[in-house]
Amino acid sequence: MGSGRIKWYICKEVLGPAGIALLVLTAVLFLGRLLRLLDLVIDKGVPAEAIARLLSCLLPFFLVYTLPLSLLIGILIAFGRLAADREIIAMQSAGLSLKAMAAPILALAVTIALLVALLGLWGAPAGNSVFRQQLFRIAADRAAIALQPGRFVDDFSGLVIYARQVDGRTGEIKGVMVADERFGPVPVVIIAEAGRLATETQNRSLTLFLERGTIHRQPAPASPMDFQTIAFEHYELGLSMGSGPADLTRPARPKEIGTGLLISTPVDLQRRDDRQRRAELHRRLALPLAPLLFTLIGVPLGVRQQRMGRSGGFAAGLLIFLAYYLGLSLAEILSVEAAVPAAIPFWTLQLSFATVGIWLFCWHPAGNSHFPHGRFPELPFAQRRRPVGRNSRP
View 1 (cartoon, rainbow, N blue to C red):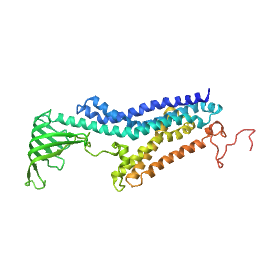
View 2 (cartoon, helix red, strand yellow):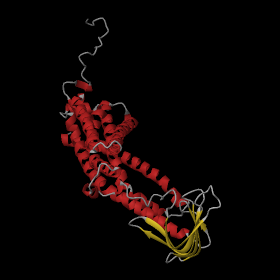
View 3 (cartoon, rainbow, N blue to C red):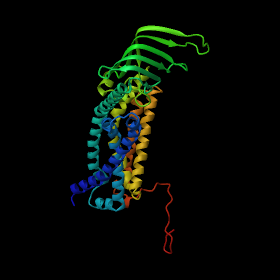
View 4 (cartoon, rainbow, N blue to C red):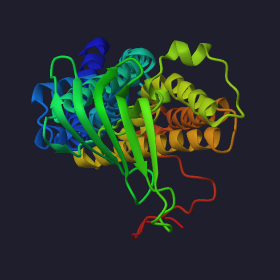
């Protein structure tokens, strides 16, 4: 078997478990997000097709993390099996070193790194932004449907709204009463002759415009005799849709902002929001290196752990990825909370993993012909076991 066929054989051995791991991990992430959206289907009557569109928007964000992890799991499982079946020794006998065996996997890692860069820098931010806009549209549609004439509606966070008449085509309402419980134990009662529900998708705002009404409030609960009545011609009341899309009116999070905007926007490190954006930028720039780092670590580690099996390879991959992900989280905390320049913790993490991977490659016995049969060299201070027997030498 030629070296080219051997390398293709190694690639196929890695791609099999890596593909299965990719499907399983992505499905788990989808399931976790689906459980958070089920109340929209069960309680709010949102169509399942709309939920499917929402989840499809999150696919690029999920793949940024599941692609490198799946590659790492595939490498650990494949090289562990090859070592357990003594195929690594056979390949070495054919003249292939560990670096030559890892060459096709490195080429595969470069391809995955480019895909992760494409998804992380452009696909995931766009998907997160579209997800938030789609969720707002669902909330706005549900708000228009929730306002039924002659019914007290409590779908809005902290508000109970009653409307005598509702025009479903124009959104005009008449005979409005609102009980606002968001600012104290005693609700503020608002009564208006007419109103209109308006949504703005771009700014993700949901507003109830009221006309010709009065506001009835008790300024001090300790003084029940005090009461205020305020007349108005126009009044704007911001709405939110409960626990699910309650935060839709907030400003865009850093993960929803395009990479070009993150780069071009001036940063004031004295502001926490700007530090968050800078940390998000360095996270996006660092994540494409994960497939290459995992390859450097996974290949020699997989050869060494030849008896761990498929479940052991899966668990080892999760542990390595968990260490990497915790490192990313720590880098973000240092850059945001401790005001450390984001480049220092993020790229120190990449350098640390690269150093470990290079060390494993350089000192692994499978890549060194001086150490036969995959055994590490004994350290100078290590005690050697002497053979026990009649002819043993002192």
